[in-house]
Image 1 (cartoon, rainbow, N blue to C red):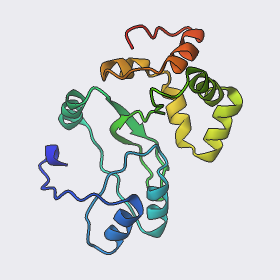
Image 2 (cartoon, rainbow, N blue to C red; image 1 turned 45 degrees about the horizontal axis):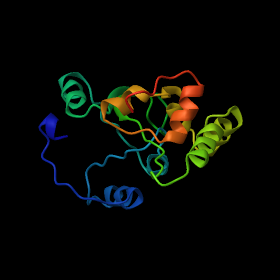
Image 3 (cartoon, helix red, strand yellow; image 1 turned 180 degrees about the vertical axis):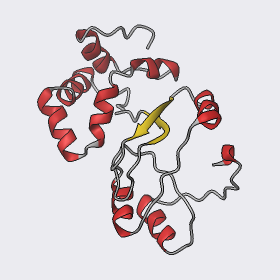
Image 4 (cartoon, rainbow, N blue to C red; image 1 turned 120 degrees about the vertical axis):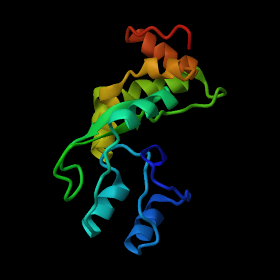
Length: 168
């Protein structure tokens, strides 16, 4: 918003509180780092009309240089009630994180199960946003771009799948 020349007053609210604040005219806009469809936006768009603001052109280019984890995405038309056109914006990958003290065999098994056909099917059934993440994976290049370390258990899984995880 600042890049577009809009004066911003930042407030940290949880998603449902932000949606309520817009309904009550105490807030003009909010962003959510959520996969599409975002449950808060789904709820919000069923209660009242919404407008998704595109991030494109020079603003998108600038944002992509600000953070190596950002990439351009398009929110498909009809992702939310009343949103009948696709909207270009910026996205970033959300990661499943494991502590360095979690045993490698545990992380390997969680990774293997998450990326199994049955695991992916279940996670997508729970929330459609997982499909976007699975479509982007392995986004190992993004991990490297932001100097993210891959847990030895996850590295074992990705190596078995033929991915180069050296340098992580």
